[in-house]
Image (tube, rainbow, N blue to C red; front, side, top):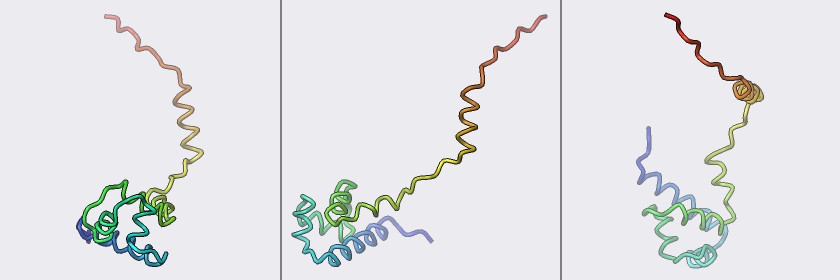
Length: 101
């Protein structure tokens, strides 16, 4: 079953808070490292709407940017797909013939 957006925001905030506590940082210290206000960090931790920029700043301050990479892993390109793409590029265009009649 899908979680609501609010539930996901709350869950994300709990994970951020856990990382902060694991790093033994206060909200105020994390806010200073992330160049944010303590209130902004509190809002993020409580799932009260935040921007992507805030999330990125906090993750950088927690040295957890790799977490973002796990959201969108790079898809490997198949060698066969690469060959097919090249073959399509090299195929000369043909003009449509004239109809007589």
